[in-house]
Length: 152
Image (tube, rainbow, N blue to C red; front, side, top):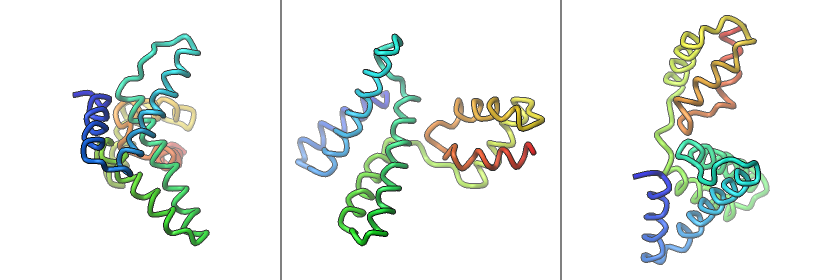
């Protein structure tokens, strides 16, 4: 079952169960996917996004909500922070298991060897190899500095 089908099934189940918060989050996910498809149509590319693109969208949504929750907590708005954290839990149901720090380090080392990277100039090749294999499983923003460190 594709990720899109899983999302549609979860949306229908949330409607039947009258789970308002879950339904709201699932609708936000669908809206983000539709927005991406519309943007792709404008660029003249295919109209449907694949599972890898959906994983990237979900990862971005999690990061946005983590930042929002942090800001709400700093501002003393714990009710809003809790709502953001609940949305994160729903979104993460559709993401693959996140790699541990050790697994990320091992994946980076393997990607460097695969790409034959020897200097910082090869960082793009390493990131491309990681994104091809580990989309949705690791934070590429955090992986960047580790790659630089190993290639420096």
